[in-house]
Picture 1 (spheres, rainbow, N blue to C red):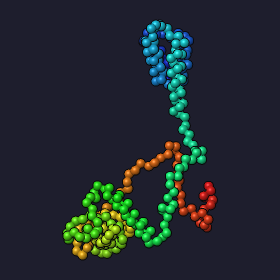
Picture 2 (cartoon, helix red, strand yellow; picture 1 turned 60 degrees about the horizontal axis):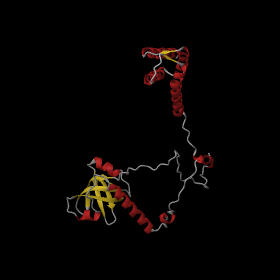
Picture 3 (cartoon, helix red, strand yellow; picture 1 turned 90 degrees about the vertical axis):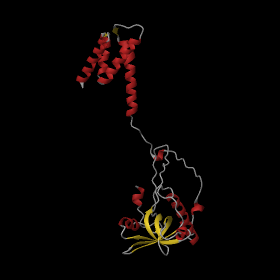
Picture 4 (tube, one colour; picture 1 turned 30 degrees about the vertical axis):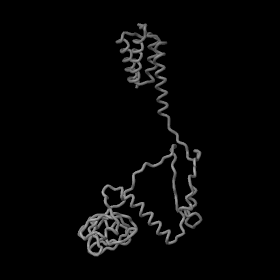
Length: 268
């Protein structure tokens, strides 16, 4: 380290002499002290700044004194150190308990989301779910010109159609996979032949109550031969964030009050 400091000092003196300037004894001692605290590149940059400042002054002294050197070097060194201290300071985040809560109740949906468990509530839930997932499916670029199941049943045999439906039942045989599907008006059976291995694998992964778009060929007796099946894509959205780096943890099924409640772990 000392070798580097000495080299930096020698280079600084050389640059000054090369530019036609000399240091008096006190100025040299100051430069020597400064060279112990900063690296070679910083000292080189400061020396060049001294030369530039002398060049801009009306009177260009042959000898540089300590007072002049202090006015240039110490001011810059202070600014550099201050900048380093600011950037090196550890960022301290507040604990959540130290942040004042800001809770605004926009509306209380309790009465709107409640259910009596009746058949009408059950039907309304599936209708709403069907509409929402249909909307997501329609955002896909590869799903265009879809028709209802009722309209699909009315097309000529051999016609190719696309319709959005909910899976009501699935059964698998040696011939392939049969899906009973429905929308809000009608239902049909869609057949996934076993000779199309990739398509059968897709059908096997489908579960009841899933809303999908099916591309198929109209067969006889309202039977449709599947060509492809499309699932809803998750929409891209930018998450809402708080201005402070505070995180929330949502938990459920704590079983408070039951024999299975883990009180010790909960209070940890």
